[in-house]
Length: 222
Image (cartoon, rainbow, N blue to C red):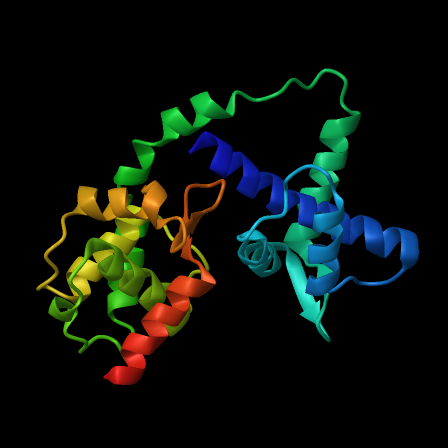
């Protein structure tokens, strides 16, 4: 899990730095194909079957797509500048990411007042999937895919979501859901489900392209 999170973080931030550097050096904006080719040329095992999905996540957070090319948005520029400052700081030490993840894992099971209000706002929004019979979904992974798709693709209110928020939204929208909160969270982080779910360094989950296609197939059948 730690290695997966670090890899996602490295690719996400690495893509942002690469786009910034390429813009600075060549006064040009690379596209997605360029990023994939550059990653494959590096002998660091960064490129894998999920690289395209990671790049999509980076794009949503840090890039402004323009004619198929990438430039940094304000969040991306701020992130890169912070990294540059950290690199130049001789007093700055590394972070024990394994301890960071362990300390914050409990936090992801709690809901704040603001988050509760956010769920109420989400369930008050019109969704084409609100009348979907969730009892048709016969596995935990399918239920989790459905929940994340509704939030990130149907309502388009978040690009990635905290497991407990996704579950509470699902439970409030569909009272017949059979899965419990712990099982829902376990499903998202299960190694066997990595082809469906990916996690950001902040502990938020989003769907892979394969999972999105699965959800779209269900919806087309209804």
